[in-house]
Length: 290
Image (tube, rainbow, N blue to C red; front, side, top):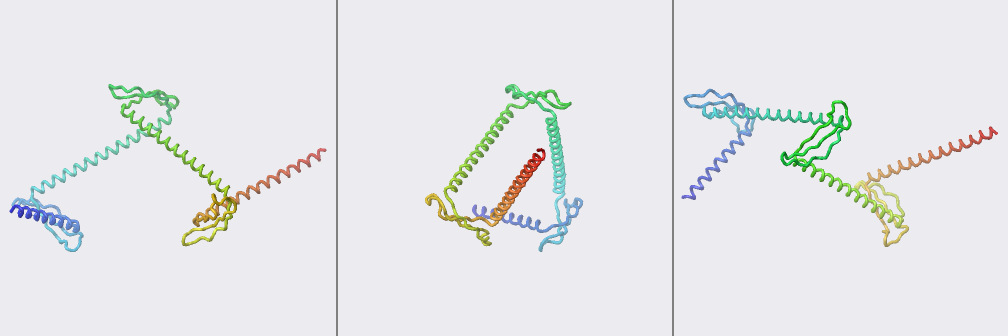
């Protein structure tokens, strides 16, 4: 009997949940225009309103009559008023917070501008005052325009100073680590280039012309055959494969390099001709003076 009662309760709860879910889905699918609530009917202690279908799928009722008790309607209205007040208070808090943030931003900007105009020399932080849990630092004006304070003092908590010093130490460590990594990478690249240069000097290759661009793989190839070098250390044949776009960039770079080389050569020739002309003119002037 006990098991039958438990099963009956489970079935009842499942039925109620399914009915509630169906109502929720129906409410999401069917959109209604709602009329104003009627006055409270003292005989039935109810208020009602009419819902007219605005949009929805098939199966939605064209009109519905919604009826609730007057007590529930009063509670609903009180809840709506309370919700509107809460929303208004939240909006006011957001507005005040934005105003405070804007004020802090403006003050920060003023301080920055003043720091640009006024240069100060500062002392070291004082020892932590255990009574007030604070440390102080004095600033003395070194250079600045009129209107700059001659001196001022900054006071912060000891905990904040500890956090600042820990942050500075961490920042310094990160900076030093980055410098060490860059130096290590630079040294590795230098050693790699040195090995490649030694390899190039040891191994001499005859290079074939580049092939045409293969549209399927978007690559060009070139075969390099060993001409001079020890076979144990040098590869006898090397196949070089690069993309067509990289090959075009290399060709453009070579063309620019050749243009610069020719321009430099022409400039040297022009300067040499100018020098020769100057020497000849100088000889002519000397002969005329004699």
